[in-house]
Amino acid sequence: MKITMAHGSGGESTSELIADIFEKSFNDPVLSKMEDSAVLPGAGRIAVTTDSFVVTPLFFPGGDIGRLCVCGTVNDLLMSGADPEYLTCGFILEEGADTEDLRKIAVSMSRTAREAGVRIVAGDTKVVEGSGGVYINTAGVGFVPDGINVGASNCREGDAVLLSGSLGDHHAAILSKRMGIENTIVSDCAPLVGMVDAMKRSGVRIHAMRDVTRGGLATILNEFASAAVCRIGLDESKIPVSPQVRGFCGILGLDPLDMGNEGKMVAVVAPEDAERAVGCMRKSRYGENAAVIGRVEAEGESAVLLKTPIGGTRVVGPLYGEGLPRIC
Ligand code: MG
Image (cartoon, rainbow, N blue to C red; front, side, top):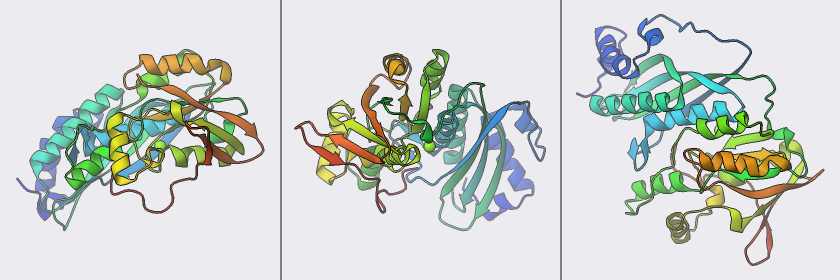
């Protein structure tokens, strides 16, 4: 069945669509009450985030827009030190969207939410004229435990800079699919709950965290350097990039440092905790290639420098201009 304007009327067709696809897939008692708001328990410092997902294609090697929207929102909550709890989702459907695709997307969202330990508790659907597109906005709520204080401005001289795995997989997977290039690259799209929990539980002093999404590692580290007024030194030989992605980048002239990922994070931690933090990442799902990739070398100036394998040093700037198609 195709989505028609009637599915957005707010009347019977809308109710049928919601009951048949979203309510069934998400299966949450609070959502199923269909009240105007979800009323839920919570206390302490609340983290709130929102993000919109407009990726094409909707289904790609390693994931789909449904998995992507849950991971993106869960990871943003995690990066502020919060334990993610609740998600909402707003669907903007273009006329002509396929209901079987929608069902697959909803099931994928539900599965990913379960993996990440969050509940989808509220939602909305609108239909607009168009040609079958699907766009999703998700908001997330989490709670920040006492004693956790994570922020870019907390980076200090001597801190270790950790990366949870190889760069560029999501970006390269989407580009490959859009350009019709055949290869074995799959998106890294994943919720990072396991590795962040492990670091928090083992008492790693985490000063700053970011998921390495749009803008890539280069942009994030420049944001850290600006916020904390510090110089970050990276060792290029320590930055993991898979041979397939490296080859792909070579052909297209892309830099893995600028590429978007959906299941990678960077953490800046106290120097004494660096090895323990890498251990936590490596033992958790999606973190087997984690590495210490650099250090905060000094305070008082803002810069990101990369030591190349042949002994040179280059300044790493943030991504400038339009680097990407719709990868998220
Ligand atoms: Mg983020």
